[in-house]
Length: 333
Image 1: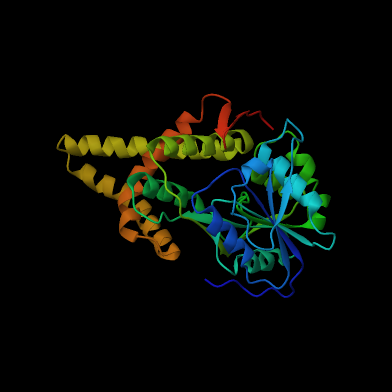
Image 2: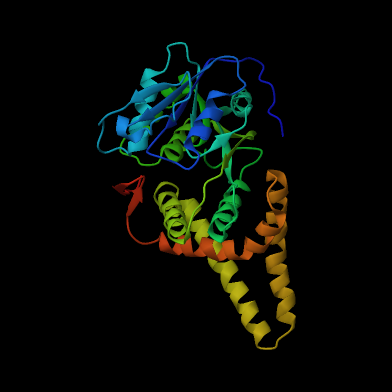
């Protein structure tokens, strides 16, 4: 879906934090430098020069080194704040990207057009994991993540995703986002809370889809999914509880139907088909929209359901995560 053409093109500062080498980093940053947008500046930000791999900066990008700022904040938040402070004085819109994603040339147009909704406090896209070569864990991560992508659409989104997120600079100040970020690890959940606290909506920009082409293995997959759900548990506890309850009920029903079917009670097969069918159909539709492998996603849909249950249960315990090589203790909001 091509991005709608904004009524006007405000000056935008695009900010992307970098923390070491990501698979495809140079190409990811190059895609942000090549955006089809009349006037924007690209700021790459990091805690130290050692976090910026040699040769990765595209021509025209500015590098902002945050240094050691507020130790109570997550490193990413400190880097973002340093970049926002360094943004040009004429900047009207702040857009945020992640270093592990690749964007289309009209990505920024999509975010800016979404902000033109009078009720919009922020605009968001989302990501699709599309590994350049197949592998069970990489494809399972794609299907696991796609479940979240299915929750974005018309109306007010529950949260903005930090890898494709935009907000008017004036609203960033008026909504006190920097204050919401104080002592926080998650930039996007806290920005979302600031927008909703101000009575504004988070508008979805379908054209702002980000492609992640990197790969993963079993250990990284389990660590990543648990970390995502731990952050959700602390920053969006109601959403986490709803997800846990839904997956416990669904997986118990699935296991019961499978047990009865294996025990020779054939009507349980109908119940199992009714449980699996809708989820696999949704998976198919998501894959079609993203241009991904329909067969792989449909087959992996049941596995992803159980991976979701595992990640939710695993995230119920503990209060520390490791993110980009640093260990953080999560606290309630």
